[in-house]
Length: 110
Image 1 (cartoon, rainbow, N blue to C red):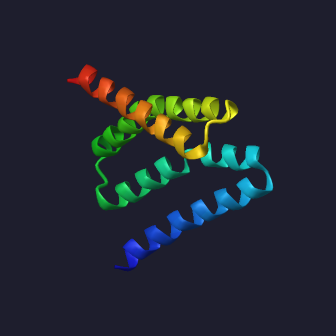
Image 2: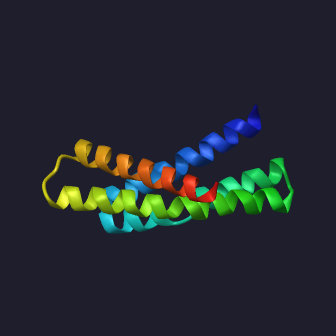
Image 3: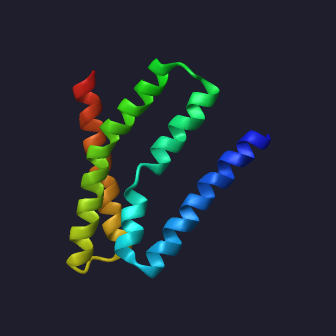
């Protein structure tokens, strides 16, 4: 239980720091959010739970595959916002594109 609580608190602190920096400087906040903190922290927790290198490597390979759809998600949101589309619609379009690209990658991998 303490282990799960520690993971939750560490994750929440990262989100709090990113949003705090994002309010002070949106570019800096975005840069910090783009750091691989979540991926590396997740790999660290995974290494404590299952210290097999192969499983951690597979996890990080999944992270790599996820970067491409995520980049397109962010790109479409930025484009929509710059064209005065509301944040909620921009987010919806971005998530939709992310889903399509993720599905496409899964089809390619099978």
